[in-house]
Amino acid sequence: MLRDMTIGQYYPGKSLLHQLDPRVKLTGALVFVVSAFLFENWISFAIVTAFLGTCIILSRVPFRYMVKGLKPVVVILILTAVLNLLWTPGEILWQYRFLKITKQGVMNSGYMLVRLIYLVLGTSLMTLTTTPTRLTDGMETGLSWMKLFKVPVHEIAMTMSIALRFIPLLLEETDKIMKAQMARGADFETGNIFRRAKSMVPLLVPLFVSAWRRAGDLAMAMEARCYHGGEGRTKMKPLKYRKQDFCSYGVLSVYLVGLIVIKVIL
Image 1: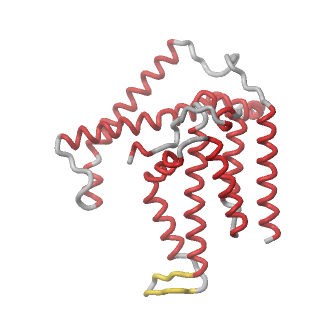
Image 2: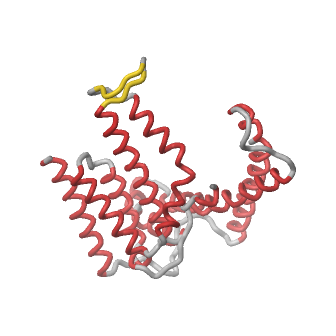
Image 3: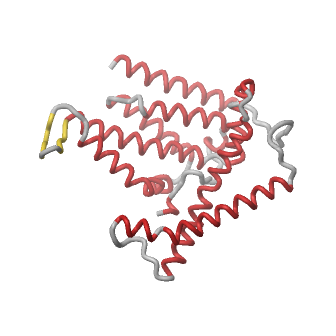
């Protein structure tokens, strides 16, 4: 299951989404996250679904590859759906003691489940079509206006980029350690919740040591290359908007305004 995480990984390709400016994709991801919480009717739901489906098709990333990224969050999805189903007040459809299912609970549960799935797919699509380096450049350039308020934009972008880059590395390391411990007789799947939590200690300790060692190696490598932050640094490939980027901004504007209008009218 750990290998199924797609957030933070990059899928090489030459699609339209791969060629877009990273600032456009960051803005698009933000717009999509906002739009995912705007739809409250079937028309808006259909528009958001069509938008996400079109982006997936344009990215040329295999749909199976994206869907498998939902496996690690299945428990969170089910828990969220059940809580919304049982604890939303409204017109009662079924009740047993303190448990009850309402008409509004069924709708909220369905909408929230779909929203969370779309959020995972949307954010995964951004990282799958953008290299960590370009993602860092896009964040730094897009947030450059915050430098007026003495915000260390470059350092923040670099930190987030390193965190995204470390996600697949740590997942791979966790998988290796888990297999090594299981070969030595460790059991991570049986017993009650307390026993399972206790069995995770032989996994977490070497993982923490490995992560600490990787962080130390990275810090030494950055110091050896005289890295001292973003002040005065230049870029080998500066970001430049192209015609397709401006067209993408236009599509995003029409998409978001259309959803807002539909929400107000309906």
